[in-house]
Figure (cartoon, rainbow over the protein chains, first blue to last red):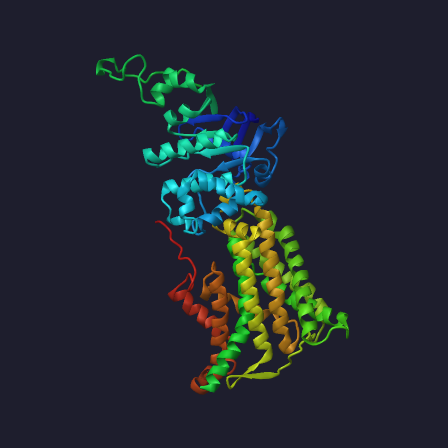
Length: 262
Length: 303
């Protein structure tokens, strides 16, 4: 189990980005993490993978544990070696390298099983096999996202942390990515999925967290989150208690007070 | 015509040395984004180490063998020195502005040069030089053997670097870090190890260049000035291109040699030894016309 306990993260010694966040990512499950821009989702991911230092941030309270052992003091490469692997937002493939070289770079910590892992990634994404010697920069956005996920799978991670993998992708590609996440998860990898696409994320997750201004404000099994009135209104754009239609007469002139308001 | 071609060959021979130095600059620049001005000192250190290893080998090894043994040993020791410098002085500065690091390397350069000078003494120290100033004839053109050796070593180094960057785990890690440091970190690549490796390679290349350079007149306290010619070479080739460093180094060597051959006849009013200035004039022109060099990536900035 990968956990964060009461994490408090400060950027540049002044900006308090996380205020006491606790989440659990059990082995082999898909956990969804929702929240609007600036809620602290990416910061939480950075804290889990040791990348805070690059951004002049540090953990001031709380801890990150892997099987009850603290790992937040470890360098990012050590955390990767322990099986916690992040796919950065915006794909970030090495655009000037070939697809195959990108995958080989992903196998940096696990060269001994590179051949088998590469076959597995190519089976997961047949389109990458077709274009293995092409320059990664010429792939479409969806293919680059597949490459980024495939690259992360090259080290056989125990936990895969995905930061908005469907950002800017066409609906059809969103489905492909969703299926791939399910398949990766079926093979035993725990997944933390940060998403704006709440419907997609909650449809495959077993548990969900909602963050707002540096706090976890909701923490429920995914099916109950999907049924939650506030989630339906704020994330799914549905309105409670009707079949989607609403007369303007019923629209209140003040904003509905959020149930979890801090 | 013969005179012209011989001048070009001479230039290529010297240019090979500049190319080795330029490769070191570019490798450090690509991995850390900062230019290391410590290369001249590392070059001098390498040459001095070579000059001490050769006598230690004694009569057991002679000729070309003694040269290659001492140049290899000097490259290894200088690589260690460079790694130590990186660990002690550069690593703590990671994350600071590139010019801060560049200024620190100037300080390191001066400090290392002072220490190394202590091992040189007043005169010049000879390095093993099995070729002397012997010439050989190829297709009717006379070329110094040591220039041929320099070109051969450059070819070997380029081949090894290509294989290293294309096929090895650490070579890939260095390329990945050059593109995107944070993404490289998420691959489990230790960026610190990459910096360390880039300094080691740059140090080793500088040592080889220094030893080759010293085969002409030995190592003296002024030898480091020659390393500055690598700056026009990298500006010409483009700061972030390895191929550019090689071609830039060779081109600068040829320009220097041609100016040396013909300036006396065609432009005597420029005075003596204008070839020493020629590379910098070339750099000036390149900076005016194509500031990112022949093979460099143009910097695109949104306004």
